[in-house]
Amino acid sequence: MTVDLMADLPVLLPKATQWAEEQSLVIAKGGLALDKTLLDVGRRVGVQRPELIRVSLVQSIPLPDDPALQAACAAAGFLSERFNGLTLGHGIYIREERATVRLLSHEFRHVFQYEQAGSIAGFLSEYLRQIFTIGYDQAPLEIDARAHEIDNL
Ligand SMILES: [Zn+2]
Image (tube, rainbow, N blue to C red; front, side, top):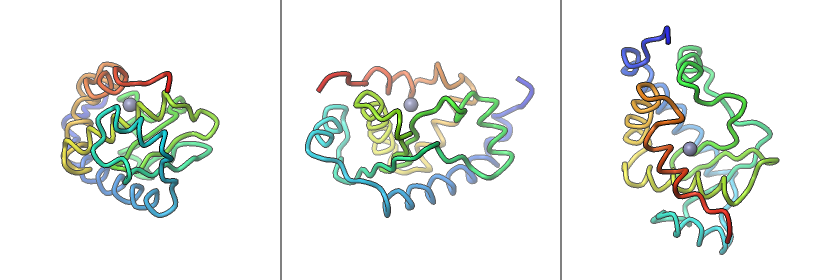
């Protein structure tokens, strides 16, 4: 890896947090609330306030405009074309053509993680540290989300 992501974290974290908070507000305004079945899925994976979750179905997951943030995400193997979901607080982007209960339950577990962290800034501080040092696939917060995926209702 040629980019020293941890050295850049103090610069990148505020940018990532600002972007995530903006996107979370966008989803809060235009996103869909969960039906009874999905509220139950949220509770099953530990979400404390599933009624606050909003889901925005999109053609592709929006990316930050900031070039440094984009480069860091690319270097960490995060937010490439293969991404089908992204959770920002209680707001979730889901690629419409890939919307499944399994993907939603994975993203709901990230909502739980945000709730435990207490804020978007708090979650991203730990999440970015993990993906910048360990990488996306092996990041403990990702392993935890995968472990809580639900296949069947
Ligand atoms: Zn994930």
